Length: 104
Image (cartoon, rainbow, N blue to C red):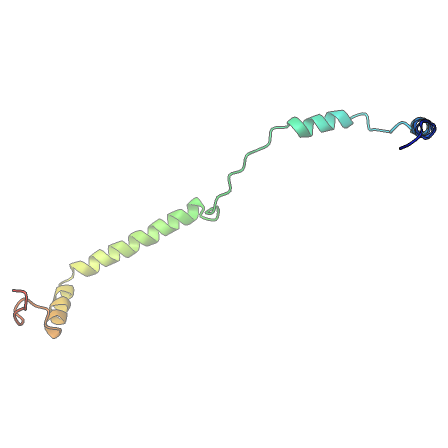
């Protein structure tokens, strides 16, 4: 345990340190800058995964999809499609006239 004499020395040393402290030089606008940083309104940014999918690209994609669909409908309305399907069905015996099924 420390004696009261040692405690008195520590207290004096502590007070001597306070005498050696100097005033800190601070910018006159430090408080204003700090308050602005603390209480400024921050913009909320919403990260999007499709930020590259701009309206121009969306329009081009829509046009391409429509063209593919129109081409597909045009091809399906041709009579060749029906003949090709019937040829395929007869080649692989998929028609209704084929052998009777086990489940009939």
